[in-house]
Length: 133
Image (cartoon, helix red, strand yellow):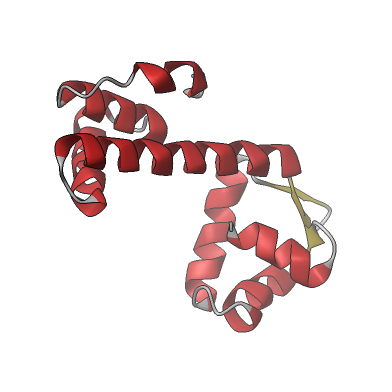
C-alpha cells in the first residue's frame, strides 16, 4: 500500500498540513525519517500525487490510483520476466534499473517491458496495459 493511502486511512481525510503528513509518515507509520518524509512530499508534489493549496496538501486520489495500477503492472511484469528467464525477481529489477541509465526517466513499467523484450521474452500480453506517455 502506498504511504499516502496509509496516511489517509489514519487521518480519515486526504487533506494534510505538511507537518501533519510528516508526522504520520515518520512517527505513526514509521515508514521513513522526517527528512525522508519531507523529500517524499516534494517528490509527490512534482509527480502530481499531492497538490498544495493555501498551506494544505491534498492527495490526488485519481493519480494515486493510476500509480497503484502501474505498480501492480510492474510487479506482474517482473514476476513474468523472472519466471520466463529462470531468474530471481531482484535480478530482473536490477536489469530494469540499468535500462533507466540507457533510456532516462521513462515509467518503470515501460522500462520493464523493454527489458523483457530485449531479453527475448514475449511481452505482448502487457502491451495494452502500458501507461501512455
